[in-house]
Image (cartoon, rainbow, N blue to C red; front, side, top):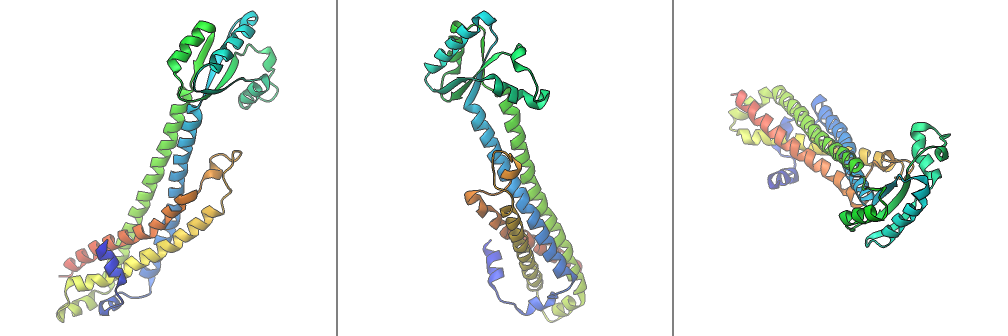
Length: 296
């Protein structure tokens, strides 16, 4: 990194004029870096949003549970009262309430439609439990003693697949960022090789007057590194503007409206031009030295 910073801080030297300041290689490198940086911003936003989603789902489901009560009709009221009393006296439980039929209808509506006659169906009585830090095994034993037909469900079956899916989505987004950087490296390598091939005669003349390969390669490395960083900066700026214009996160919008940066996460995209510059430096240096060896 010190060598990269020193290289970029130097003014234009005689060797820099070996690389044409304009032409298709310059436009191609800048455009590719800008396009890939734009995509990298969205991939990074997806990775961060997936992480927030996984944390939110895990926290929400970990702090809530349900007691399902399938008792005979003549015992339902008594056992429901017993369940509420057990939950009320359990340290760590902050709230316990019976879920009314209207809410049960709303929960079943996506599958059975809005006209489901909940009152006529033999649905179990549900009690919502909110809290954390309580002894689940002890709570199950107390419920079994006070209400034999009560079943405690901590949503583990639902929580683990959701969190796992969100975490895999985050890994996929992170892998996409790495693939984008790889594509940038490949494109810059091709552009640098084309520029070297186009200037083969100039390079031979420079060698005849005593120029070393490191001196010649420096021109290509510096020029293409600056092109990669400049294009990536443009693409990053456009991507951040697009993310800023997305709808704000809300409950109704769900995951899609939360696809963006929040708080200090806005600083992460600023690393993309630096990464693009580092990739450009490494790719151009390797391509230049390999091509120069081939011109011997």
